[in-house]
Length: 175
Image 1 (cartoon, rainbow, N blue to C red):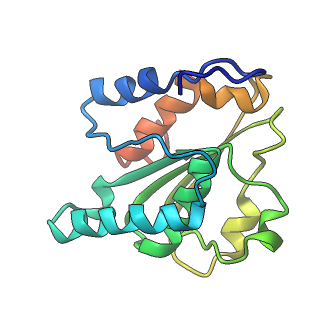
Image 2 (image 1 turned 30 degrees about the horizontal axis):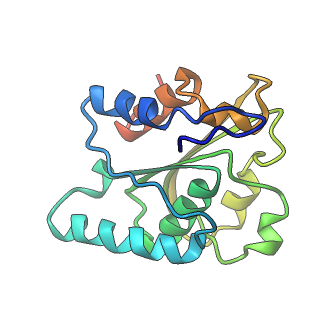
């Protein structure tokens, strides 16, 4: 995470995590190896979540937030855990061709999607919600207009962090 992206700059990874922690969230996060397989990694995260559920953590107190490839991992976790009471935030991680190219993802849970209008790697995921075979209790989508392309998710920006926190707290109207 210390290497800056040639177009988007340095990811504000630690600042993003610190923002959640300062508001009382318990954050589990790790930097993945380059070229990590999203499906395989999601299986690992799913096992961790199932342990939390087995320990008695209420599913609505668990939120999986993923940006870019991490967002695809989070989408798979939503499918694998298949718990409609869990919260998910998918950020900058859906393209229209995903319906055809990744048909095995089915949203399940309380789903917030956030995408940037200028980002080719993230568009509205309403079509994915409509094709999903699992239960989605709450669904909301936010289109940002920062003009930062995919770089918007590199920033510790309140534009996506604040709604993510509200969603994690069960504020599905984002008020």
